[in-house]
Amino acid sequence: MAVVICGSLAFDTIMHFEGRFKEQILPEQLHILNVSFLVPRLQREFGGCAGNIAYGLKLLGGQPLPMATLGNDGESYFNRLKHLGIATDFVKMVADDYTAQAMIMTDLDNNQITAFHPGAMMQAHTTQVQKRADISLGIVSPDGRDAMLQHAEQFAAAGIPFVFDPGQGLPMFDGETLRHFIKLSTWVTVNDYEGKMLSDRTGWDSAEISSKVQGLVVTLGAKGCEVWQQGHMQWVQPVKAEAVVDPTGCGDAWRSALLFGLDQGWDLLRCAELGNQVGARKIATRGPQNYTLT
Image (cartoon, rainbow, N blue to C red; front, side, top):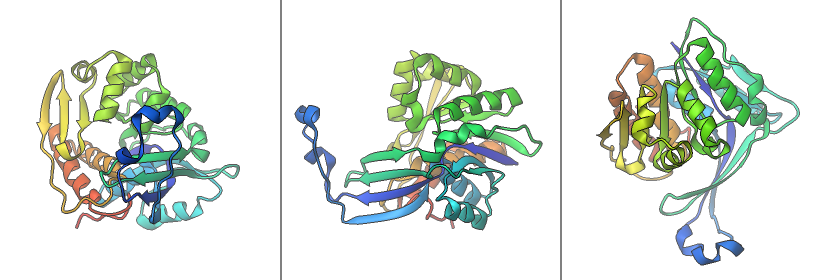
């Protein structure tokens, strides 16, 4: 069955700082912050959460249906999706804006600083979720604010179960709106930082959030993940990566495995175990869409 992946398609410019941010940024001087980082290595990649998740789901043998918007410079990305065998039914191209752009800088501790230009992503709400016999589930990942709200409501109205994955888009929403998202969704997934922010804004801890959906997963990077169901937490151990090269897109790789498992009817723990395996494979490769699973 097909999985609708709502989110961004973006070009990623990935820069590697051969030092540590914590050694360059003085906490007591944040009010007058003025820093520059020398980045000897730079690469340009296809990215964006919808593209990254679709790539991983296709590798696993799933049927991704990305729902996203490209700009007037997006033809190469559109052609790449076609080349990968990823359906473009819900990929729109607009002439009056650039494709979303992410400028990502990573330090030696795999901390990241990102600047993001949304571009055509801000028109993503013009494409609507449609009820189709071949669609089994969906995901609402970081996207334009209106798109995230409307797509979540459209999934719910169509009776399509979906994952709420607010990611970097979480700060756009207040507590009341986030509670609305959770009530509409079937599953919720966040990393540990986002999980703390989600709890702070909603006033609900992980146990309470999990009691309102079929499951909440909090990913913990190299420490594995927490699977919460009906107020109870089970820890899923991490998978050791062969090498730690680039964390860009690891969360999206993890989510592709989650969606694959859910589409197969697996329980959430088994989905999380596969997610940890795929995330470990991704972090050993530079770029969000260059890893393989063979």
